[in-house]
Length: 253
Length: 303
Image (cartoon, rainbow over all chains, first blue to last red; front, side, top):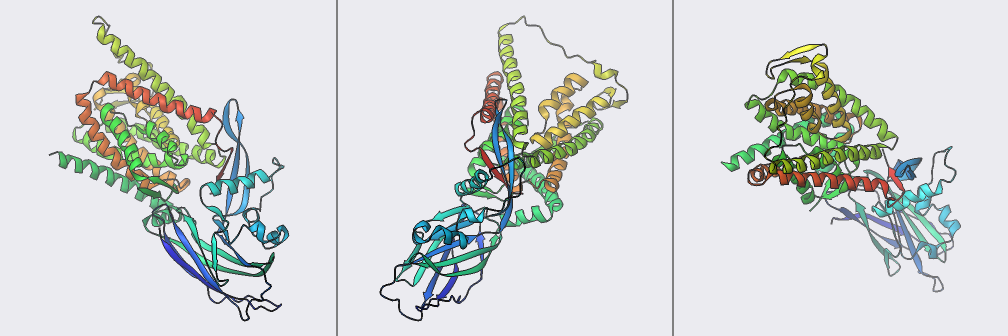
C-alpha cells in the first residue's frame, strides 16, 4: 500500500454570522503506482477559526467527496431470449465519474437535509445523472442505479460513513482506497463543513492523479499509438516465445 | 501475487495466469494441438474481458508459433507455396473477422456470440474426440479391425485454378486451401484460436496433403495470420494486452516442454479421453453461463 499525502487544506471558519471559506493551499499532483491491488489516498487538513466556538454550537462535521474524471459509459441489461441471456436493452450515461468516494464523520443523511444534499450535489446519484435520451427505455433509473451498484462492487465508487476522523474540532483526516484501474486526470475534491444540519462552507480543489510504472506506459501507448503498440506486441511475443524455447533447449543439454 | 493487466484493466493472480498458460502448453506438448480453443474460455472464466481475451490470445499464438515455425523450417517440413495460398486467405479472413468483432462489440453482443461459437465448437470437437477415443480403445482390443485408408483423390481435386505444390507433391486447385485459410483467419480474429483443429484435418482429408508437411505449413500460416490479427486488433479495438500474452507464453513454453516429456511415458489413448473430457467440461461451463440467470442483469462498458 502506498500512502500519499495528498492535500493540506486550511479552512477559515469565523464564528460570526458571516462565514467565509478561505482555502489556504492546495492543488497537488500525485502519482500512483498501480502495480498491485490499488493504492491509498491519504487526505488530511485543518480548520482555522478566528474566534472560539460558541459554547451552544452543535458538533462540527465534515463531508469529503472525491470525483474522478467523467467518462461516458454504456449500461446494458440482459433478458432471456430463447432460453439464453442476451443483452437486449442499453443506455448511454453521458457523464459518470470514473471514480467517486464520499467520506464523512457521520452518515450523510444524519448531517444534512435531502434538499441541501441535492443543492450541493453530494452523493453518487447526483454524480451519475446525465443520461442521453432513449426511445425504448422509459425508466432510466434502474440503469443509473446499476452503474452505482456495479462500480461499488468493483471498488471504483465508495461511501465511507464515519470515514473521516475529526480531532478537537480542528484536524481531520481520511483514507480512501484507490483502485488499480483508476483513470488518470483531474480529480475534484470537495470539502463541506456542517453544523446543526447546515452547510457552513464548501471548498473545492483539484488533484492531478497520474499513474506510474510500466503498466501505465503500456496502456498509454496502446491508446495513443495503437499501430506502434500492435507491432511492438507482436515483436515482444515473438522474442518471448523464441527466448523461452531456446532457454529450455539450452537447459536440457 | 496480484498483477495488474494494463489493457484488460483487471488485477489477476500472476501464478494462476502462468498455470493456465502452462496447462495449455502441456496440452500442446502432449497432443500437438495448439490449445487456443481451451485458452480463451479459461481466460473468460478468470474474469478477463472477452474482447481482451480473444485479441491477446491471438498475440500469444503468434509468439508460440514462432519457435515452432523455426523448428519446422529447420526440418524442411514447410510447404511455402501452399502456405502462401493459405496465408492470403487467412489475411483476408482476419480482416473480415476483426470487422465483425468490432460490429459485435459496439452492439454489446460480442460476449454472447463468442460464447455460442465456443459452445458449438468445443461441443463438436469434444464429442468427436470422445467417440474417436472410444473407437480406438475398442479397435485395440479387436485385432481384425479394418484399416482405414486415406483417400488421395477428393472432390477438391476437380476444381479449377490448379497449382503445383512441389513440397507436398500435389497438383490441386488453389480454391480449397484459400477457403480453408480464410475460415481459419476469421476464427483467429473472432475466437482467438490458431485454427489447427480445422486446418490440419481439412488439409489431410480434403486436399490430401502429406501429414509430414501439414503441421509445419499450418504453423507458418498461423504465425503470420495471428501476427496480422494482433496488429489489426490493436489498431481497431485496442484490446490487445501484451503483458497478458507474454505471461501466457512463458507458462506455455514451460508447459509444452513438460508435455513432450510426459507424452513419451503415458498412454496416448487414455490421455486423449482426458483431453476430450476437459474440452466437454469447458463447453458445458460456457453453456451453463449462457442459460443460468446471470449474477447481475446489468453490465457496464466504457469506451
